[in-house]
Length: 208
Image 1: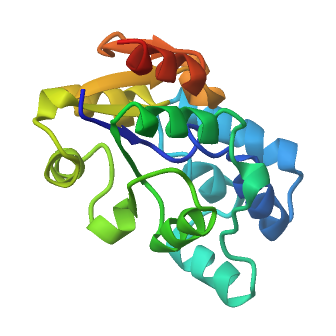
Image 2: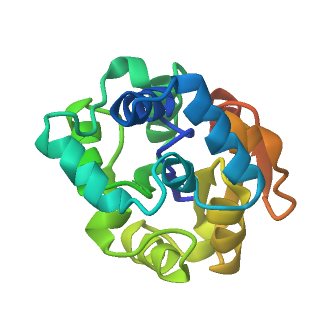
């Protein structure tokens, strides 16, 4: 392997703050919104449909811009990172692997992650690329961006349908992280590896 590229939400960062902020904005209990997210995910729907259930007909993008204008846009700090993130990424880089971060997020999140000083060689988002997972073009961009041939690049994510299956279809290797509601609930039979933590992932690629 030459490169390891990571998804963001529920791979590197917990979505707890994200959905908590939405719940406060929408004026519903956090547990209610979390339950709705779980329901739509189990039905194979976009998790933003949980917001549309609370506010039928809402334009989620416009609502997010309203939040941002009100000073309640996205925010990340060290507490949003899972505790195994920094040690695992550092171990991978020390082992000579190129480490990238690329997930379905708005452009602001890229700057927030860079501000945390993560041990990564490059960070980007779907908004910056103009294409989101599971669109095959997202993974074509990963192949253009990360060093190595497709079979030398590993994409790591929690979502079997958005991360693992399309990465494998693009010719990448894929590691399924059993983390978060989607990663724990759904199996990823197409994955080359299934791990329960990023420490376990780092063990795979630093012991070779």
